[in-house]
Every structure is written in C-alpha cells, then in structure tokens.
Image (cartoon, rainbow, N blue to C red; front, side, top):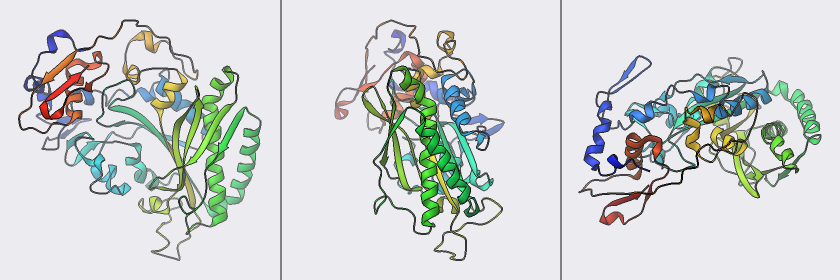
Length: 407
C-alpha cells in the first residue's frame, strides 16, 4: 500500500529521492565515483552493514549456524568478505558470456562500471580457492534487482560449500562414506535418487573414475545428512519420514550435477544445487592446496589429474521460510521486536503472525515520453519512496499506452 501523500507524485518528482547518490558512494572509507552505470539506491546501500546472517538469534543466522554445525570444524566458515566486487570477479572469472542478462544494469546493482554489488557468493570462489583451504562454507548477502512481492527481495543470502580431496585421501574417504551411510540408515529419512550418470550428466574424463565416484558418493551422503539435520525435526513433528529427492541438473561448474528437493506439504521444494566440481573451476584459481598448480589436463598431461572436489550452493531465505513458516521474505529485514523476539539460537520454531490488518490495493499511473524504463527501475522507485509499506507491485496495463501499476 502506498501512503496517500505519495500516490500522486510524478515519476520526475520521485527521482529526486535518488539525488543522494549523485556524488558517488562511500563504503568502508572508499569512495566510488558515479558514472553512466551507477544505479544502486540508498535503500539498497542501507543493507550493506546489516549482516543479519551473522545474528545468532535471527532465522537467517540460525540456519547458517545449523549448517556450519553439521559440517563441523573441518569446514572453515567464511563470513566476512566485502559485498562490493568487480564485474570480473562476479562474471568473467566464472565464465559468464559477455551477453549474459545478469550483466545488465537492469538486473544488477552497479556503483560504477568498475564496481558492483555481488549477485552471488560465487563471486569469491576463485579467491577462496587461491587461499588453499580444502573444505569451506561461504555465507554472504547478495544483491539483485527484482520485483516486489512476498517471495522476492533485492537483498538475500546464499551459502556455498566445497571440498577438494587429494588422491592420497581416497582410501580414508571410502571409510568416511561407509560411516555416513550407516548414520543415514539409522534416521527417519527416505532418499529417492533418480539421478543418472550418462552423456547428459557425465563424470569428467580427466578424473580417475573410481575417485570421482567416491567423491560423488561423499557429496550425496554429506548433503543428505545436512538436509536431515535441517528438516528431520520438522518431518518427525508431522509423523512422517523426511523425503528427499535427487534429480539431474546442469550447472557450468560441476559435472555430474544435481538438484536436491524435499517433499513439504505435498510439494517437492528445491533446496540446493550441487555436483562434482569441474576441473576448470580449480584451474581458474591458479594455485590451490599444498602450493601445487592445477591446470586442465588438456593443457598439461603431466599434471596429476586425480584431485577431485564437490560443491553446493543454497539460499538461506528459502530454507528459513520453510523451517520457520515465515510467509514473507521481507520480514527477515524487520527490526520489530515482535518478530525478532520469537527466535533463539539453535532452535527452530514456527513464526507467529502479529499483524492482522487487511491489504489495501491502490493504483499508480504515469506516462513516459520516449524513455526506456525497465520494471526494476519502477520497483526501486517504489522501495525508495514507500519502503516496506508496499507489499506487492504488478504491472496491469498495456506498455504501449503507458505504465500502470497496482500495489
């Protein structure tokens, strides 16, 4: 709902709210001068230091901590990487094509042409691999221009994890897999693995097949255990086993690749994507592990090719909304004590609504002469002016006749 004094503002007057970025952006003592790419708004910049995923009693922080606890101390948690990155980090090092839509200012937030807000945690992947850490969990806030409704927000949180196994560790990995399999057999979980290995989802030819199979099994056992640690209690409360399904997927940086789903309220919900890491993903980082250099086998056949790794990525909000039964993603950003006081570290509890006021729909119309305006530009204007008062914005009339939005 738009407050009444704001409903009749013109598009031109709304843009005055953005004048504060005309001098550039200051963050952590660094000045980023504006240019034609600059499109980040003060309402977005205000999130950069919130760090709700680090708050122990916040639902996002609770989910992050539960995952880190499941994997244990051998996985290094990484949580302090800055949100401002270069397009090279965010796109080029991950082999995004030059025409990928994610590069467009209509989809991503730019401070200027040289600096942007990361759109995914993978923007730090090469940096982390270069550090030589063999097992890690990276959590961070990420930023994407998006629509306004209950399930979308321009700021959200991701976690990705990775493990790289040396050839000398494979025998120990086989023992670990057997122990993980025994542990899963002892809990109330049913895993439907309908994934396949074949031409469309192959092992990589430069990997030792036996080693790749061991790492693939470790990936599945590890993530099944993590999913049970998160959702097992909820399933038990409902008097049924936790049902998990593995299906084939495609990701540029893993092969084979999978998506993992959980059955919830009669529907399969996608929880995460994962797979055996492409050797090229390690190659991009230059050096990794034991100060040794990894390059593609095709480039240097003499380089050991048995090192194999797995990786996964997930959205913390998606999991938290299911676990805590939170109906609106924007609630995660509230400072209202009626929300925050409901949650405690290490505990999953059901959210109790505290507002029963009905929605109020309003129409906003405006004309644009010879200007190209993306829907995300309008969404940013609404967020800047009305903040969290607006629950949803929808385009309701013909673009050729002008813009009309219902809120």
